[in-house]
Length: 211
Image (cartoon, rainbow, N blue to C red):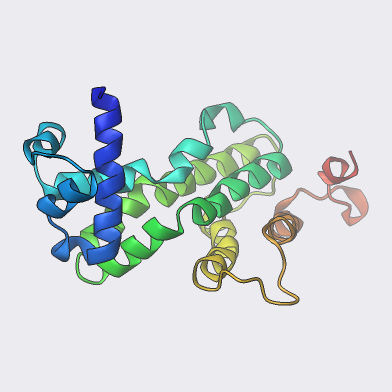
């Protein structure tokens, strides 16, 4: 078996072990058994210890890093397009990775550094980019001057209830918006307060919506 395939096999088995038994309860021996490995040395060849393996599992399953590539290429694109793209990546985070979210939430109470590292590598990266992007849009005159530190957090905050609902209440409730509906509403509400207004109070960015 190729080394890359072996590593992927170990990571999959480790995710299953950590999810089933938590960080403290998981063992290298248990991971080896799930991966159907004959020797623990095959795990230690790739990962020095259980903590490093746990960190690699989280990094492997942070979808924001995979779903949104080449962020810098988005810096000069229109807000409506970029916010929709980032929002889709954020909502996709829960669709593909409910298990890793539950794992992080379960471990965060006992090991705060787990939650901190997870946020830093995933949602945190998206938040930092969004802050710089909104500042750039102010410079371009597309958005009204404001504190992008707060607006970036406000936009992500609008998405969190949808993520939480999808993770903990996977069966859609009657009347709840779909992810697509919720994202479209969030982008519209967010830009309503920040788009530059022309004469007569008309939003200067209204042509984006009419195009």
